[in-house]
Length: 259
Image 1 (spheres, rainbow, N blue to C red):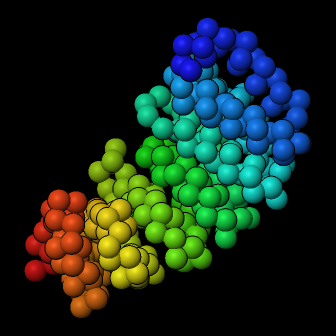
Image 2 (image 1 turned 180 degrees about the vertical axis):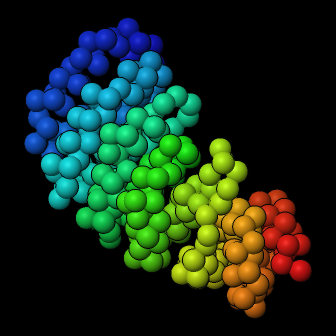
Image 3 (image 1 turned 90 degrees about the horizontal axis):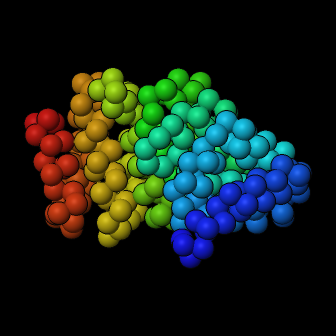
C-alpha cells in the first residue's frame, strides 16, 4: 500500500539497504532484498530517488558481480537496474558510470538461455542506451553484439525478440546528436528473421518496423536495405497490412526512401 510505505519510508530504506550491505555474498537473501526494493521503488518515487545514489548502485552492482552464477539474483538485479534507469533523473548516467552496462551484459551472457534474465537485462540496456553519455560505454563493451547473440539464442520467444529490437533501436540512435549508427548485414538479417517468425505478433512487427525506420536515416543503411529489398519489402508491407495503426507510418517512411 503506497500510504503505508510513505509512513515507514526512512526505516524501510535503512533496513533494506543495511541487509543488502551485510549479505552482499548471499544470493538468496539478496534476491529477496532486490525484489523488495523493486516493489518499494515501484510504489514510492521518493524511495526510488533515494536508491539512485552512487553508493547504493555500487552495492547492487557488486552483489551482481560477486554472484554471477545465480540466475534469480541476476534477474532481480537487472529488474532493479531497469527500474532505477527509467523515467527522468540521472539514474541512466549514474548506473552507466558505476559499471552497470557490462554488469547487465555479463548477467545475460552467463544465463543466455534464461528468458527471464534476457528480458530484464534487455529492458535495462534499452533504458541505459537512451543516454548519450552511455554511448561510448556501449561501443566499448560490445553491447550490440551481446544483444544480437541473445536474440538468436532465444529466437523462439517473441517477448525477448520485441524487447531486444527496441533495445537495438535505442543503441543505434543518439537523440542528442541526432545520429544513427551503421546497421550491419547481420543485424538486418536478424530483423527480417524476427518479422518472418512472428508475423502475427504486434510488438515484434511494430518494433522491427520502427527500428528499420530509425536506421533508414543513414544513407549507408538505406544502401544495405536496397540490397536486401527482395526480402525486406514484402515483410514491411505485410506488417503494414496486418497492423496498420502500429506499422503503416513507419513502413511508408522506409518505402518512400527506398524508391
